Length: 114
Length: 114
Image (cartoon, rainbow over all chains, first blue to last red):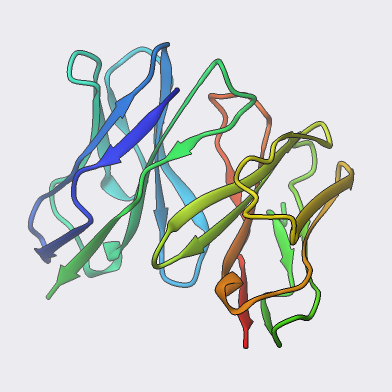
């Protein structure tokens, strides 16, 4: 069975500051890892995903994440956030045992203050 | 591409009434997912289909909920009878049905049961 833990439910940060949203996962097999973003009153959309290869993955809107197999983590980072980054962020994991089903974390609400 | 289409976008109904939510997945996708999102419980997977066949309905809350996928381009989620605790945002998502594939979410249906 797979699971995802997002370590922070809320992260407040000032505009132009760096941010890290933490995600840990557990799975007994090789995994695929995703970060999705949900803006207010919208559905989720993909930010980035790790499938294989380079452990540093770059996504949209200046976000990046690093896959760390030994620590079973996939933390999301951005060096300088904007007000428009205020949203809820979901980490998700899937593996070969499911027909495309992903397990989602509980979400982290990022609030960027001016 | 129109993306995942959900209807209605908003639904207000009275307790005991039947509610039907509709979803049209992205053309060519062969997996479809129904999620429910609330403040209290976060994002929950209710059921997912692969090639129009229900694969996992363990997230369906109770017998009042049912889902169908009569063909590759249409799915319904029905609640009968509805209760106030069913009030939530219901999302439909679709993908190519492989674990490394992105899920594409619709805009959601906001359901309020009075």
